Length: 288
Image (tube, rainbow, N blue to C red; front, side):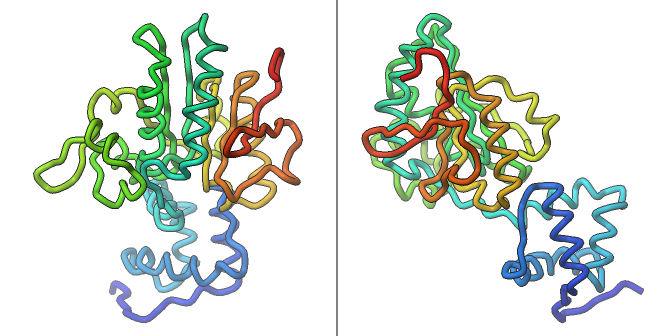
C-alpha cells in the first residue's frame, strides 16, 4: 500500500547530515544547521511525490535508484535560487561596456576573438544582456568571433534560457531603448528576444564542482559569476575560483556579485579599480 500523508515529514539529525553532505559533494552547495529548516521545507513535496515516509528513503533513492540522475536535477532546481533579470547591477555592466570591452577589443584586435562565460546563468538574462552590450558597443564587426556561453547546474532554467522568451518581471531594470530594439512582444504578452542577439549565446549544463566537465570550457576573456559562490563554503569557493583562474586568458577579467569578494580565498588575481566598480584580473604580460 502506497504511503500517503499530508503531515510534514521531519528531517532527523542523521538524515540532515547525510543529505547535506550529498548535496555538497554533488553541487558544492553548503547547508549548515541554520539552513536545515529550509532544506526540510523545500524537499517535502519530493518525498510526498515518491511516497516516502522518511528522508532516509529519499537519500537512498538518490544514491541507488535507476532514475537518480533525474531526481538529482529536480533536487538542484528546488534547493537553488534563480533570481535574475536583464541589466542587473548597472554599475558593473557600465564598467563592462565602457572600460573592459574597449580594452579587450584593442588587445584581441589581431586574433579578433572574444569569449565570455556567464557561470550560473540561470534563465539567461545575464548572458543575453552581455550580448546586447557587445552588439551596442560597435567594437566587434562581422569579422570578429564573439562567443558567449551561459552555463548552469539546473536543466530547468536552461530550457527557459534557450527559448529566449521572457515575462515582464525580467525587465525591471531595462530601459525602453533596448526593450524596443531587441525584443518582440508575443500574443501572450511576453517578450521574445531578437534572433540577432539570441544566436550570439550558447548554453550548456555544467556543475561548477565537476572538474571533468569544467575541462570542456575553452579559454575565456571574461568570466561573470555573480551571486553564485555565496551558496558555497570556503573550500568549494576556492576550488571554483581556482578553476576560473585556469580558464581565463592572461589579462582576463573575473566579475563577481557586488557582495562577493576573494578575500581570504586566493591571492592569484589582481584587484583592479575601474571608474564605478572593482573587478578581478588575471595577471599576464603587458597587463597594467
